[in-house]
Image 1 (cartoon, rainbow, N blue to C red):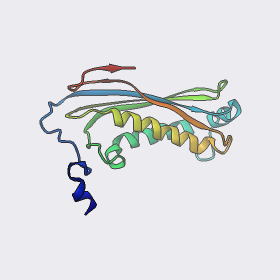
Image 2 (image 1 turned 90 degrees about the horizontal axis):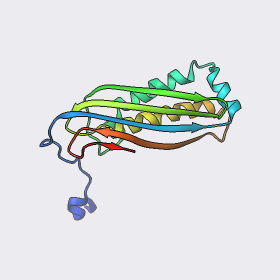
Image 3 (image 1 turned 45 degrees about the vertical axis):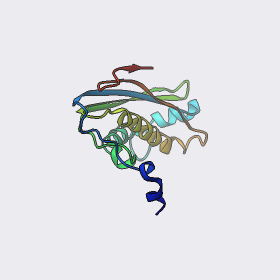
Image 4 (image 1 turned 120 degrees about the vertical axis):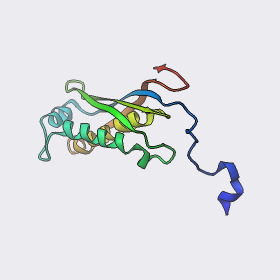
Length: 154
C-alpha cells in the first residue's frame, strides 16, 4: 500500500532499451591497509591457499554477479575483466585494481567497483587473523569510457 502511494518513487530498473550498444570500459581501485607484519604473513600464504589468488578469483566472480547484488544494476554481458593486486609489504598495503569491459547499453562502473570491493573483502578475511585493524579504503572509479556520458578520468 505504501509503495502505491509513492508512485514514481517506487523502485524500478531504468529503461535502457533505447540506448545505443557501445563498448563500455571501467577501471576502479581500492586499498587494503594493515600492519607490515600482517601483510608479510598474508603474502606468505595461508593454510587455505594463496590469499592473493583467492582475492583475484573472488573479484572476478563478483564482477560477473554484480546485478545479483545491487538491485538497480542491469545484467551486463561482460566481454572481459581483470583484477590485479599490488602488494607493498613494507608499507602494509595491497592495492586492488579491476577493469571491466562490455558491449552493451549500460556501463560497467558498478562491475569494476564491485570486483574491487569483494577482492578487498577476501583479503580482509584472511588478514584479520594477523591484524584486527585491517582497513579497506579509497574504493573509487578511476575511469570509464563508452556511452552517452562519454569519458571520465579521476
